[in-house]
Amino acid sequence: MILKDWTDEKAKAFGRETLSFAHDLHERPLFTDEGLAAALEAYPRARLGVFTMGEDPTDWTTWRKGSADGLSGEQLLEAAKTGRIWLNLREANLYLKPYADLADEVFAEKEAMAPGLKTFKRDVGLLISSANAQVFYHLDVPLVSLWQIRGVKQVYVYPPKAPFVGEEALEKIVLRETAEQFAFDPAWDAGAQAVELVPGRMVTWAQNAPHRITNGPMLNVSLSMEFMTPQALMRANVIYANGVLRRRAGLRPRLAPGFGPGNIGKLAVARGAKALKLQKPNERVLPATFRLDAAQPGVVLPV
Image (cartoon, rainbow, N blue to C red):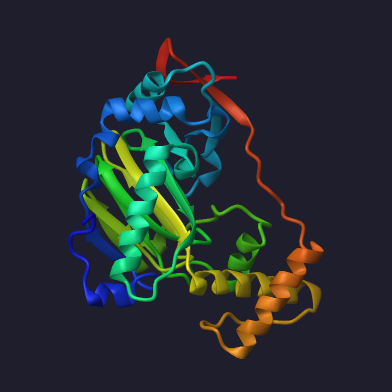
């Protein structure tokens, strides 16, 4: 068993509350230096996310994309060890067989332990990040669980409601009019759940709950597992439909849970709007503004 402290109570709250679990993934050789370097070497370089960021948790515009052309897997790992770098191997389960096998194992166990749970659109991402690095305040459209493998980090989870995120702001993100990162007020920390993640701990939270992350003073390795369930997909489509109805019909729809008649109708609206391409997404494409060099590990250099 991967998860060590699953209970019936946690199964009932899964996907709706912030929950913490114990796991044993950190004990696997997949996550040694050699295993991480091999993953970085094998992962498609064009898809590798290489980022750096500032220190102010309110200044999310300092999140910058970089280039690591020509660096080996070992050199990329060394850059994360010595710099202020965040390496993101999204959908590692689609490109690396060990992570595809891991995804099958983890989600099969989740579905076996939570009666009625059905997961799909699975994205298992490998995150390798530097000491004291951070991820700014943001939210995700799918459900998420974050598994700590190496190092220590603090995760701050905020309720998915105003003032932390309003319904119209949520619609903009689901419609891809804006980025998942958005303005953060430090006063909101009073309403957050702070979770310390150490190796062998996992945390998951309610769908669309805003969160931010700060690393401790050491290399961090984590797995981000995004996925959908029928309930989560319905919520995403209802939010999408609400955004369309607000923009196209001048209505003021409200977000409600479940599979009631109103939401079934909104599901049809969302599907129709997508088929007709009524909403044009405003994709945020970050240009590469820095590069990494094997001769200067971890140093952010101009492109």
